[in-house]
Image (cartoon, rainbow, N blue to C red; front, top):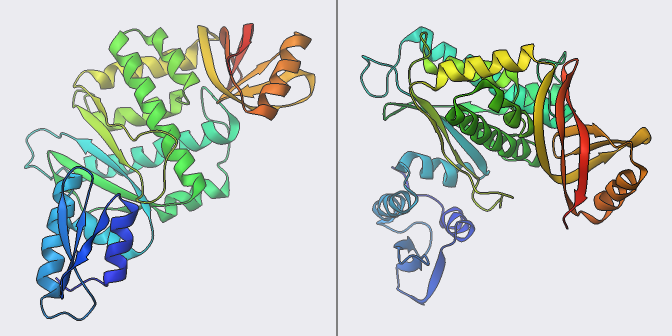
Length: 333
């Protein structure tokens, strides 16, 4: 292992909550974290024991962050921040960290489809099924995603996504949508998937998720997220884990979304993102038409002043798009 530039090391440490102690030794500086962790950083480049100190530092940082040394090394040496989404699959009868070639290919195809479905929800709003061609920026984002190496436990596939504001929006929305799908799975009722649509999920996303559950849709799977160091997120990155029976329930939910016209009552809470003529409004990911002029005026004001609103009604399928038929609109500040 070669020594890392001191400036790159200290830049990463500052971005992740470490800070230097006032005392400086002739060859080392001490950096600490609020949780009591401590690492030693060479005082300058070119020190004789720089490689040893680099190895010790990376091990200390990796232990504190619950990651492997290789990931921390890549973050520091790359010089560019990246979010990471890790796909956790559990193929049976395979050594930890391995999967069959067909299943590995299925995982990559499924992850690409999951990202595409999430991008559609961001660009067009909540939807039920596919809506034509993807924008160029969707392909550009996937092209920049870096895969591997696969890790044990049982089979963990890390994917680095170079940070930019659009990619972060996609991953944040995906994290939210996966949580909503998991909540729908827990209810064990396909109708519950209407609430996942409000969160940015869709039949497309659900069908893609089934690919991680194996050919018989019986294997557990999950996702973990880590936001780039120094790039604060609007929400915390959460792990989303699906049990061995989730695949079949997700498939049933996708079928319900494609076949039902009236998906049922839902409530949407969020910011007014778009206001158009004729009372057409987008709250969070969901489109709706506010025929009550009082509601329409309130939506305009809420968008201008960035007030949150809560809206209730029936979610219906308007072609491929999901639309809320509103019976209550309230500004909640």
